[in-house]
Length: 184
Image 1: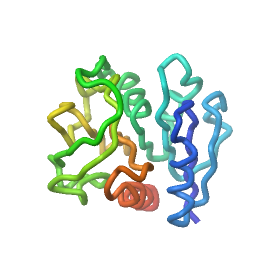
Image 2: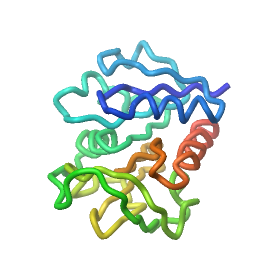
Image 3: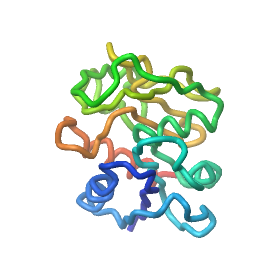
């Protein structure tokens, strides 16, 4: 059975990320961000959402392992920052429903959602410039980089929260990440 751990970056929806994975048949648990990456054995890593970069603990170390990594909101921003991208405050701010355009229908994480989907997202902070090796896979009127991917490194991120009921087809995003992990 595929094992995917959720690294807890102190987000209010972290338990829903674990539940979404469990509900699609994945062996999963929530792991503290202070846990050393060397102590975690998993086929995939989810970096949860969270309130700020000051509480990410050892989460950056999980980017150097062999398992695919999926960053959600703060998790995506963490991936971008650690790989040389630019993070900044969003023009829109708090949580809202957002119509997202999928710009890469070949992307293994979000491509199946093309041409567009409706999501629940926070834009207090967001990725402003992609790191080298990453491509933008989704955009919106609210945020230029709603999703990103470095398929070679198996690093993926979405600005939105696929685990909440307000996001259409959120389970599909998790199912796609499971498929990525199973083929890695």
